[in-house]
Length: 107
Image (cartoon, rainbow, N blue to C red; front, side):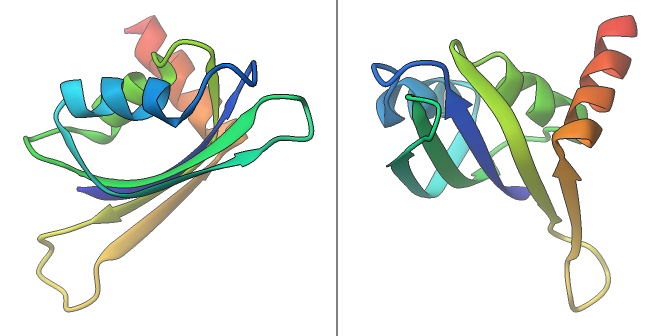
């Protein structure tokens, strides 16, 4: 599964390395990443990556949400390996991500 996401850090001291290290440890291969200043005094981290194992959408949201000092506010999932020629894309906004987190927490 390939995905792109944007996370906002709570502090300017939380940098790109603080986001990509946990993703690599969780089993994701990074395709690209960039950092830009946020209006709220932190940073916006943009990441494109793919899972190396058999991660589910819930696993992905859980992994992204567990990154210390970051808030996930945009997630686009590109389901690879489908039978159609064009991969199915799922875009999750902040509300969808929060709803998914609530469902994971309740399980």
